[in-house]
Length: 121
Image (tube, rainbow, N blue to C red):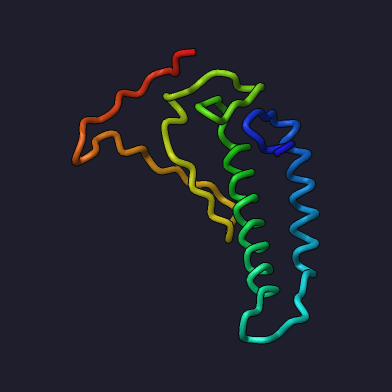
């Protein structure tokens, strides 16, 4: 929330990446002592923690890459919306730490498209 929240800057996210790297390293040493197969809540919590870390890293990398402000994503260092370069989806690939992009479907099959426009304040 502090480093990758709705309102963010590159400097805040840089600090956030250092914190995430430390947490990711600590997670490599996490273990559970309960090895039972039945009602093992410790195993479920460990899997959830691993998933939360993957989600945090994905969100952070995509937030850092997107150099614009759009909707609920506001960058103080990039205050304007940029449809020319950023009207696309971000897809993070954790295995190689890469971000790919996918076009936004602007021609829905079962309804009229909603025109893209700046939000009125």
